[in-house]
Length: 310
View (cartoon, rainbow, N blue to C red):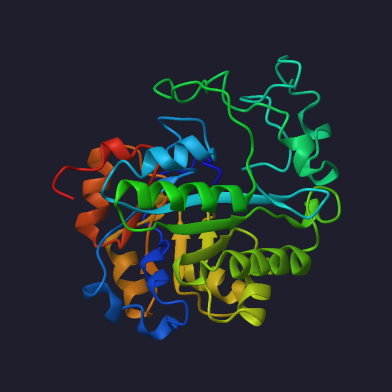
């Protein structure tokens, strides 16, 4: 998810209720009653981006080392051979990625390295971890490739079993925008169908939420896979009422930037049967404040900063 410079504001917004993922057929109207039944939902953002390279298999497995983590948040785009690739952008970011030769990707060329025009095998040749991340100085640099969603689920579930911990949930963000249609991503209907099909093939529908800032694929998921939990991601100041009306249906989860949440926002959303899990919260003090306000979970880059009593 992008972290725009959003000023802290008391707007009526709130975020995802991924513990609704316990039941893939759970209707939105019963989300509030689930609050007493489900534990707090700590989510590793892009795995554990503050500690290891984002959206990489090592980062997802690292997040599992923290017992509080119940969900792994990740982003998907699409390759030319219709594979779901775990990546925040549908190209290779100049900030963290390198060519197969080892040369850093430049800002001038990054958007020309279009994942939608490359096969999964071609994508695998690029590195997006050995340079480290300039905005996350605690991140340990290591060579990693952009994996497929299948690779992630298989590796992570195997690791969880080996660690003797419960299988994690997956919070899958569809990365699409109207201006990307047919250029960087497939049309939203096709994109949504690929995600639905992959979830079915991996047999993870009972521990998945599908989220997006783009309402169009969410409508497609709601129309074609009504049993899946849906989260509306939000980073604007338009307000809950406007955003839900724009979506066109009531999602189980509403997911804004944490700076847009107030205690009243949480109450309003809970009264509407919608759970609240803000992104991306990276200080212990902010986590504690949001918990006090009653949020249902928190997405963080730093699972090591989760309060010890949580």
